[in-house]
Length: 418
Image 1 (spheres, rainbow, N blue to C red):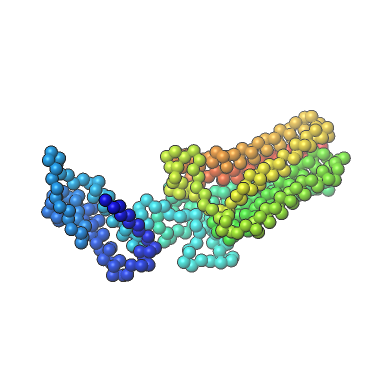
Image 2: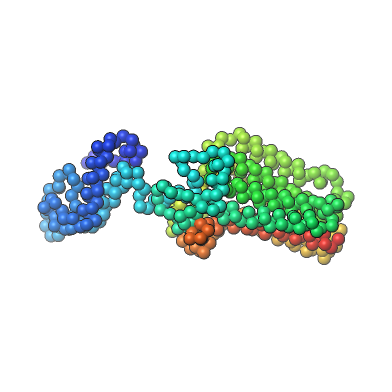
């Protein structure tokens, strides 16, 4: 028997079918659905069961008896027919299937898009406070709630981090008495720059749903990260060497030059690669057993620009710049003394371990995303209140703030024991 395959394209149906044909299709399939739901009797006269409904304009099949086998009209067949009919009606009427999830990552109304400053304000408000999804098809995320957004926790975690470091920098600027020294000035500068890093990161996450805004803000985020790590590490070295005592100039300039080369490379790459080639959808599937193919169903879904084959290079260079301080450890023991240097080194090691662990949580373990995907550890989400979920990247943000705090503590401890 020849196989016949039917394919329904909702866009083609909406555009190609005339109004009269649409009305007739809706009426026919609605009648079928109502008959199945209300338990309508089969009108063919061949079946007396309530779940067997006839399709309008289609002749009933001839009754065939099989000896020894009781004739049955099963609910499974009726359910399948009803489901297929409902899918066709939804396609014609522009309605989403019952199991389709709403796209809550997108921001704004596609029918009336905003531009410029209005679009920026819309992005920040939707990500940070309330994402208006009125008119969108599908079910609401069980983790985000009706007005939530995937980037909300990542945004606020670094806003809080920025405010903390702004307060620290202000207090240090007002109270510290070592601004005239190289190490004291760099320590104060590192506080302000770190606050700027977290603020830039928040701006990027607020604009992440828009491919055109994210095209720029993501590069600014990278630049801020490299400048922040370079400034902080240089300040650490200045404190460990008591203002670069007997340190060659090329050693002092090594980190800024390296960071500058990396920044130029990623800016050049961003300029060279078209926007469409880097914009991708991200779904967390690592360690997911129950829902390996359905992270959208609970909100763990995002879009963004990717680094492609250079992603690991970006992460590795960040760690290398951060780890540059440890080359100055012998000098720190010689100039600061064993007791002070031991505390400083311990804090620096702990901060470095935190950064490495945070990267692993975000990129490798994807915790708690893998558990949330299994509908476990739902305490990390607040769909009824803030509309955010503590995904793996938000956890990484918190760890990054703690790591920066460790480096601040090591510098201040060393300066206090000069």
